[in-house]
Length: 541
Image 1 (spheres, rainbow, N blue to C red):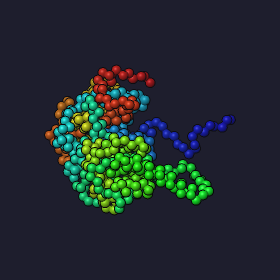
Image 2: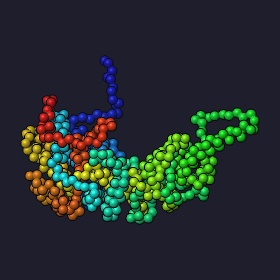
Image 3: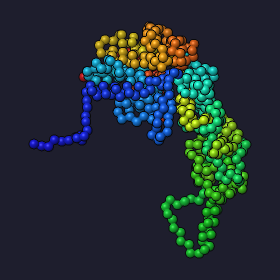
Image 4: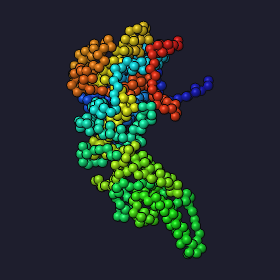
């Protein structure tokens, strides 16, 4: 007899069939159970011990899942959904996990005998999200109406820890995103939060001392504090990406000198090289020179003698922000410097000592396209949570700038989508209606969870809400996350951004990130009709 061929190790165990399906569902349920109590204004904070031994106190879904070490593949895929939601729109990370989990927990899935057939039905359902979104009760808004924008951002971050501090975080987010917005034409605006907004956390002081700087702040001091100015009004700034010191050889270099005079000649060559570079810069009469590389003592001497302040070894990201803020161009070689490369849009350069560190401020810029948000607070843990809340608020503000459309919050949108799916499932017979019914029940988990976290009677509240939304009417009716009362979201001014809800629904029914061709500009989504989804054929097994 021939010996059996071993493909897998003896220690490995392979599972398949219904047992694995149920294990995947239970793993997803474990993830959702962690996040269920963090939804809504009445949510609770989670205290997590991270890998580095630090403490994370937050109720942000993506921040919690980022700190959790998960081994199960199904649970990992759920966490990836939350990550996609955070990358795309920056909000709604908890809602995505909850609705996806309850879609898997639905009893219709447990009756499925052939998973491939049901997967094809889910793919068919995934072609219909834009049909649902087209039926959502939307309201357009103007970015000039500052009170409306502030109300929307406050509504979206009302579930966060910093909502207790009033309008502070919402004001910071709106101010920062409107500062860096770039008009692309055709009514489109680009807001790059990661590149051009820096959040600087400085422990100490009160949270109310936080502010948005019309410019850039970074943790650096001038090279020679006693000889160089620490405060310059209306400075001219030169930004460099090259070292202001003698070039070091890439490999080890040996020089054999026969005479003593040759050593002096070698040193003089170095000094002449550095002097030549400094003269090329100084002929433009700058007040401040900033380089990403090193700056030698001799160059420091020439600059201080000419009354020029210098900063060295700055991060590339900070240098890019300074260029955007002051209108300068980063130069790679001093001999290529031009008058147009100098930044002149700065009102003040100043170095201040905050706590034990020195910080350089380049502020009061004219029409800056980069800014810094300075956060103050009593502890690092508090500042970390404030930063997470601020990032969500800035994402919401960015979404409004890109697409100024609102939908009702408080679970009203999810109930409208659920009612639409129930009406659709009533027109279909057989197992083809199961995905629609499963999704309809899953979307109701958002208002149900809001009611549970408020401590009201869940069954009575959900029955009333379902009755109001049954015929596609009362689309603005939802649940007040603070009191648990059923109310009109329009009157209560409880809103959500359209972009957030559209991405949430798309993640839930398709689970994929919409891709765009390289180099393609932002395009408006095309609304699929019901007929388009119906015309897709399901191939027989």
